[in-house]
Image 1 (cartoon, protein in one colour):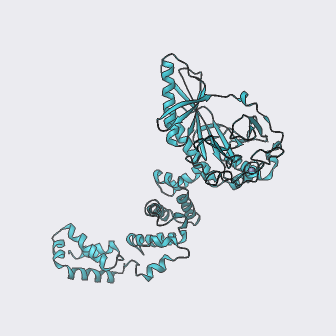
Image 2: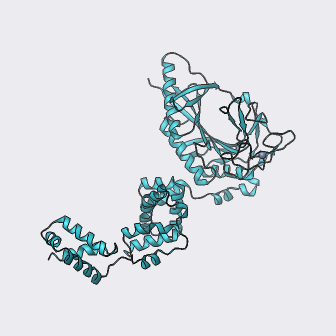
Image 3: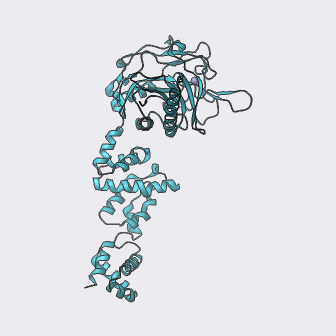
Amino acid sequence: MSYTPTIGLEVHAELKTETKMFCGCKNEPHGSEPNAHTCPVCLAHPGTLPVPNESAIEKVLMFGNAVDATIATFTEFDRKNYFYPDIPKAYQISQYAYPFIQGGELGGVALTRVHLEEDTARSQHDQGEGSLVDFNRAGVPLMELVTEPVIHDAATAGNFARELQLLLRTLGISDANMEKGEMRVEANISVSKDLQLGTKVEVKNLNSFKSVEAAIEYEIQRQIELLEKGERVMQETRGWDENRSKTFVQRTKETAKDYRYFPDPDLPKMDIGAHEPFKKVRLTEKTPKLLNEKRAQYRSLGLSDEKVEVLVSNRELDEVAQKLITKGVSAGDFVLAANYLLTDITAMQIEGSFTIKDLNVEAFIEMISMLQKAEINSRTAKDLLGELFAPNVSIRAIATDRGLLQVSDAGAIEAIVAQVISEHEAVFVEFKSGKETALRFLLGQAMKISKGTANPTLLKEAFESKLQ
Ligand SMILES: [Zn+2]
């Protein structure tokens, strides 16, 4: 009989607010001088009092609203007691019995709860003798999401984490960069042969989607091997060693009892519905178009599933696509514009010559429309792409000035063809005898004479008419 793995995820995400969770210090945990953003509150000086950050609460509620969860009516903050150098109060302000959010679903995975807490400081153990503590991160608002134990394989867990990152970014509530620790995933994993859940092991330090999947695969295998040998799985917290691709014991798992949770007497109890900015209708107003809605919209305009995923997972490209829609471009123009975005414009961004943020959307729309009307051809468009990154630019004016407008006038085309034939009579004879490469050469010469502006379809027709 085979084993069924059961996995539940716990994900922490740093919220993107101006200030920390309970004080006025700047919320900038990464990239500043150590201890640049501290004050008596987040350093836990005696006699200081916390004040909850309204914007952080609003962001958690927006998340709850987006995943169709139940938003608490009554809620409060609790103290989670433990002593560690990176937790100056010797307790962390968190939520226990009354989280802001309960239930809801994301990417087919049922959620248990989402609560708000404060991040810990960051300890550094590799800076010479002793350990150093940087309090810039202490008190940064941290959203903790817990899923139901309903995941049964590593790939589903990885996909859930990806979908969550996308949603956090779409909502603009967290940058959720895993390498920076802005989004941290922990997995609770057990295996069992019957309906009873096995002993669960918590795996931490998963700082990439790849690690999430690899650690779960490894841990499932490790637990099965233990049980097959007749040994027991210990309830413990394990770390993930990226280099050795193994989990290792960190400590035996604490239980809720060990933390001696109790409501924080320094913070008010809250009636969420009574506060105007927290009302559902206000939250919905602030919520940007969500992922599935965007996916459906892009598909309905004619984009392939593959292209849709690239767009929704790249914030800058997605923003341009949304602007195109807001400006009312047709489905045909949208698909053509998306192709340029996903190929040439992305390549220019990668080369570092331009940044998509500077793309002038009006000029881009003008160029696409000129292409569709055959006023310029795709070769000319390539030459004009670099002009799309300047403000107040008219693509039509540039194309006209530089003589790049496509030549479709029958007389002009006829004149170009006549010139090419007179200059390359021998090749023209080969063409008449049915040589395909000869036509390609003649077309190339015609494009050269017209500086790339001749309408290629009309040119080809004109040469072919000479065969009769
Ligand atoms: Zn502070």
